[in-house]
Length: 543
Image (cartoon, rainbow, N blue to C red; front, side, top):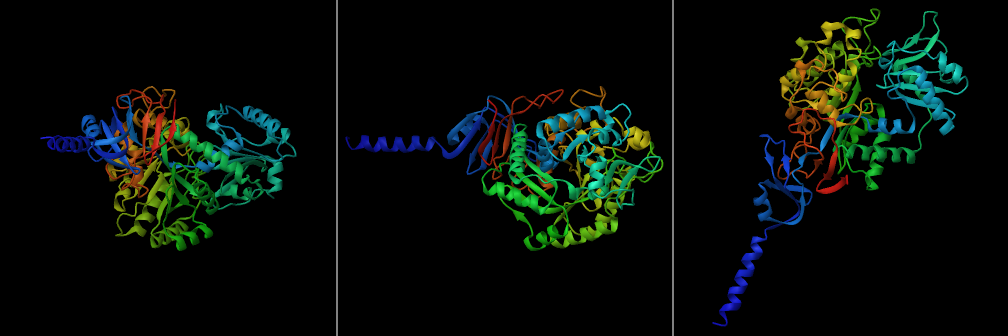
C-alpha cells in the first residue's frame, strides 16, 4: 500500500502538467481580434510562438491549451498591422530636414517660413517642400518675383506638395543654367505673358534643376528615416510600399537593417533606371526580414493640382493644355516587357483619364495570357466608366489613396468640370472589377495617419468632417472593405498575403492593438496604436 501512494502521486503530477498546456511565447487574451481572414472572423485570444500565430479562438480555450507570457488586451480591438500601399518614407524624411511648407495659406506665409528656416539653419541653399496653391485665395500657380526680392543671391527651390511642380528663384535657375524657356518632353518650363521665366517647373523640367540640389548627409538622413519610422508605428503602420526609390536608397535601407534599426517592413519599388534594371536582372527578387524588392515604379503623368495629369480633353480651367505624359507609352511598354521577363511587378502612376486608358491597354497587351502578375495602377484617379473593365482583363490592381479625394475636392471641379469629376476617385467601382483594392496615403503628400484614410474611405470626409454629406459619397467603401485594403489586399498587392495581412495560424504575428475601437465608430480620426507587435515582438507602446 505504501508503494501505491508514490505511484498515484506521479500519475497526478503528470496529468496536472498536461493540463498546463502547450508552450507559447505569448498569449493575447481578453481581446477583440479582427482577423480579416476570408470569413472575417473575430476572436477573443491568440497564441504566438517563434514570431508566428499558432492558434486563435475563445478565451477559455486558448488559456487552457497554452502556457506562456500573457497579455490582457482589456477588450481592445486588435487588427493586422496596417499597410500603407503607396508611400514615400524618403520623402517624409527629407521633408523633416528641409523647410516644411505644408499648409501654407499664401506665398507671404511661405516667405515667412523660409526666413525663419534661414535664420535657424544658415544654409547656403534653401529647399522647401509642401506648398499647395489650392489652399490660397487665387488658386493659381505662383511666380518667383517675391522670392527674387527676398533671396536675390541665395538659391531657393520649393517643391509643390505632390512633387510634380517646383518654384525656383532666379538664383537657382541661373545656377542650373535655365536662362530661357525650352521645350521639355514630359514637362514644362512656365513663362508669363511677357515671355519671362516664372520659376515654375513641371514634372520632367524639374530634372533640369536636380543636379544643383545639395545632398543630405547619410547620418542625418538615417536619423530622419528612423524618426519617420516611429511616426508610422504610433499609428499602427507596420508595412509600407515605398513607391519609387533608387538603388542608393535601397542600400541605405539595407544598412539600417544590418544595424538592427529597421523595424517596419518595406516593399520597395525601384525606378527602372539603368543601374536599377541591371540590379533586378542580376539579383532577381530580393527578400529579407524587412525588405522586399520585386517591382518597378513608372511615373506615367503629372498631377491634377499642377495640371500635369494627362487628360483626353483639355482642362476646364486651362483650355490650352491636356497635361502630358511623363514617359511615352512606347517607353512604358518597353519597361513592361522587361519587367515581365524578369518576373518583376509593374506599378504605374496614372492620374488622368488618358494616362489610365493608355497604360491599361498597354499593360493588358504585354500581360497577355499570363496569370497572377499583380501589376498595379497607382492612383487611378480619373478613369472613364468604359475603361474600368480594363482592370479585369489582366488582373490589374488599383492602388488608391482615399485622402487624395478629400484634399483634391477643393479644385477638382475647377480643373475638369462636373462631368469628369463624377468619374474620379471611384473606389467602389474599381473594387467591383477584381475584388481587390490596395489603400495608401502617398505620404508626405498626405498625412501618414491611417485613420484619416478610413474616414475618407468610409465617410468620404476629411478629419474636419468636411463636406458634411461626404464627397462623391456613392463611391465610398464599407469599413470592412477599407480595412482589407489596408491589410490583406495590400499584402496581396505585394505578394505577401501568405505570411502577412491577416491574423491566421502560421502567419506572422504582426498586429496593432488600438487605443480606441473602430468597429462601430461614426467617425475615425481620433485614434492611435496602444501597442504594436511585429513578428511577435513588441516594437512600440504608448503608455
